[in-house]
Image (cartoon, rainbow, N blue to C red; front, side, top):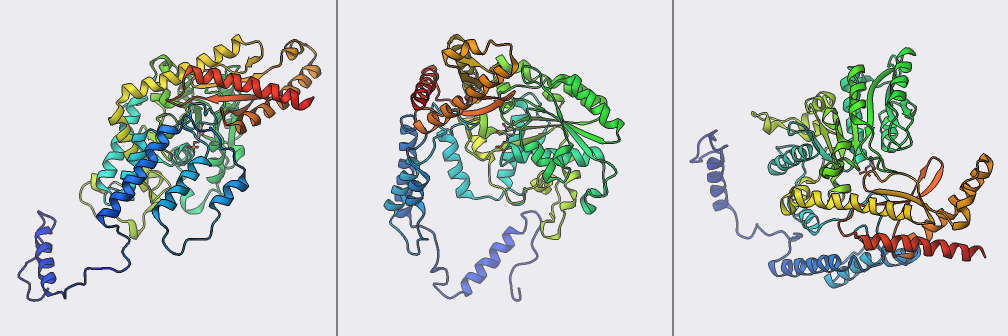
Length: 535
Ligand SMILES: Cc1ncc(COP(=O)(O)O)c(C=O)c1O
């Protein structure tokens, strides 16, 4: 600046002193009142106090009431649409009216935090997680890289290391938080493909001229996100080679070996084995150690999909199931499934983090180029996954772990597992229920069997047995629908060896034995209602 009293920015303080002096000079030359913006959306202190008090009151009230609310609302899609399908509000509305509609939003929601919500895999949020989301949104960092979010980046890298060490993968792993298990699996398969097949041209030219199909291996219980990732990557769903499972729904390792050997013989290019550490349907954990050995033998990438189950390694009574996870090249795990963290929060762990930047290196563009001198300050999450803009997911995990401590969270997970065993034992002890899978982790799969069907199930006549099972499928499907819409409990379903199973997934720190008892009674009541419907 001409006439300026200040010199060239000095390197030691990043030029801050010099820039401050320039600012002061400019301020002196400015006309008064050019520091007001007519369209500012900021809220004055009194308004802020009112907004925060009322919002916090609403959230506090929800946490106090969630256990007493119906698990599922007694409202049709039409009822819900009538409340919310409104024209856009052109002018401001009073806060009270907006918050009143938020209350109605609670009333017309399904409550994953209810102690008898057992559907799918959805854990409740802790209050700490909810407030951490508020703090992260206030800061609103876009966690693309250290440059964009120094503290958030460091916290995320710390949280990833913590998660790695908690599940027994050591503190050396790197990776990133994702929107969930599906995105963690997609990133993992992409890195696996580029690392193992060294198809240098694939990034620029695509896969159309690949010499032979690239194949990966997973059990018949693998989550749908794996074939979906194969589809998205252009590999093709059929290249996910399906390995059968045993009676405990665990991958048959001998079958795996045979499949790989056969594929190599026909000229395919195997690159990855995906093991499940907690399948979605039953919670089965594949024999990780044996699978790791096969992967090493054939030099394949070993990915463990632990989106649902990996955090159960915190329960000492279940740790043995996870032996071998430390040999995985990558692991997916979801704090939003079994660390009681608000959606969204998945995680991809990489044993050798450097594989990720090598795989995503084609991402480089001028507008994201980093001009940093230190390696840590040049760190970018876009080198580790598909997303560029990313929320500050790590804060909710970081605050949760610090607020409760690992011991308390591990105890909650262990109690979820114990409740699944309690439910399985109750089912087995009852004359009108049948257990359809072992409760390895926190999932119990069973069906209602009316007493008159017990004997019919003993038949050795295959077509007759198929007929009985088909009738039980229809009955249990109807039972599930009645239970779901009844609002007292919520179960989902699984198809196990062609049979319709009622499925209870317990990842809820509010659930007690009493809730399990009430749920089984609710199933009985629904089954009785079905038999009345048929009369
Ligand atoms: C084993 C497993 N993998 C992956 C996923 C996908 O996770 P998300 O829903 O977080 O994408 C799930 C979801 O239930 C799962 O159970």
